[in-house]
Structure formats: C-alpha cells, structure tokens
Length: 168
Image 1 (cartoon, rainbow, N blue to C red):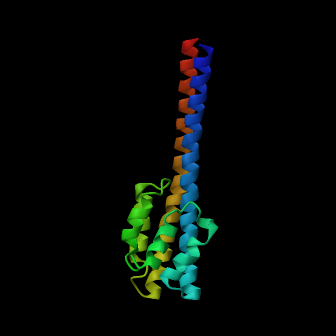
Image 2: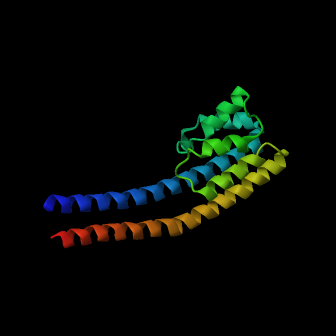
C-alpha cells in the first residue's frame, strides 16, 4: 500500500510539473517570436536585406532555438522550393512547433504570408502589426495560462493526496 501511495503522489507531482513546464515553454516560444519579428523589422529597416538573407541570419542565430520552423523555411528558400510563398512552407513547419497554440500558428502563418509580398514600407508595417499582436497574446498568456496551470497543478496534487489518504 505504501508503495502505491508514494507512486500516486509522484505521478500527480509529475503531471503538475509537466503542466507548468508546458506553459513556461509556450511563453518562452512567444517571446522568441516577438524577438524574431523585431529582428526582421530591424533587418528590413536598416539593412534592407532580402527575405532569404533574413532567414539565413535567423537560422544561424541561437536566440531562436525554440522556433524550429526557421531552418526548414530557409532550407526551402535555398533549394528553390519556395522563395515567395512562405505561408505554405510555414504551415508544414509550424505543425512541428509543439509549444504554439492554434491561434499562435495562425497569426504566424498570416505574418509570413504577407512577408516579402509588398514594398519595404508595407513589410515593416506588417512587422509592427504582428509584433503588437504577439505582445498582446503574450500578456494574456502570462496572466491567464500560468494561473490556470498552477490551479490545475494544485488540483492534481490534491487529488493525488486525496487518493493516497483514501488508500490508507
């Protein structure tokens, strides 16, 4: 019985920690997206780099380690598979980005769909717009998701202890 009780408590603690860690990873991923968009805006504004050179720069930067979709997009650009239709490539690449929610993926896909398809001023405006969208999303996530996850974690731990008490 004691082994079973300890096992249940450990499992409930592991589930709670996993929930909190997923929320932290989601927040970290959104922060990296905001940094990526800021970087794209700067590279477009001051360096007037091409989209392919921007993605080369991003793919070589370790700051965006959670954004696994950057390298495949750049590789597709280099191979000539997809120079201008970023959104289609992203849809495939974004499916492997586990920490992003559907809304985040949709916003990112929309951002990339517009990138490279207008003049420089339009692309910079697009960066400003989506940077604000992701910042608002980040604020909401930090307020609600962490609170919800901590509540769920406490609930899971409580249920684990309740089951343990009932088994005594």
